[in-house]
Length: 231
Image (cartoon, rainbow, N blue to C red; front, top):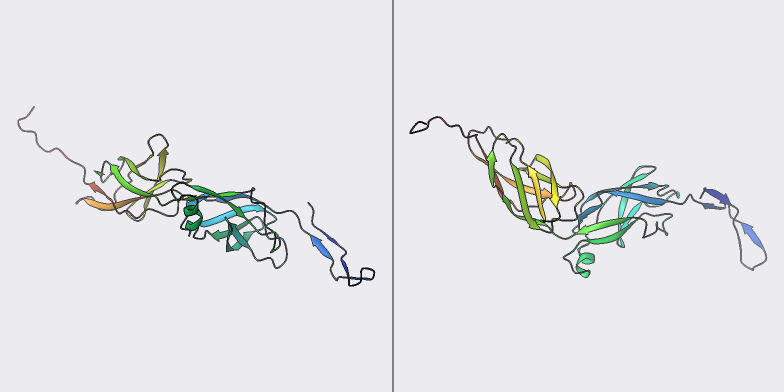
């Protein structure tokens, strides 16, 4: 739909009409096409970028994101994208049982009153997830150890990563059959002279990480210096 301004007049007696200055403006139909990331913990605080067409085209429209009926302020990035932070929606997840991911509509404002259709774009609320174990629990400081992690509610992610310590992040993959994650340990941040134990955490959306603090230890490579008796 093309934006256009049409005459507008009002009457108090049904016969005599007075024109309204500026008329009434029809806006180009807005649309929400994608959100990144498309999943996040129901507890909120995920930084979202929502893309679409003619977002908030009306003058003076307060930019907002409406997620499952919960409204938060948004910031315009450009003519086709806004940024907002997901609200705490644990009540919505709990009302649905609280144990499985819940898809909710994500809507953008058209004119301060109307929003994009609820069927146009969805966001997935995730229940609390955590890591309970991984194997092996150690590897050489040079990295390269393939680690398999198990835990609770690790499925339905969109951007899986492992974080060794607090800054070393590597991609991770999810196995839907086993319900486990796997990633490869990076090079140790320590000098390798002494064992270095750092927490191994995971994220399902590239932002919020678990906080289970289970340590993964990296050690100096084993060097064989003597065999007794000799071969």
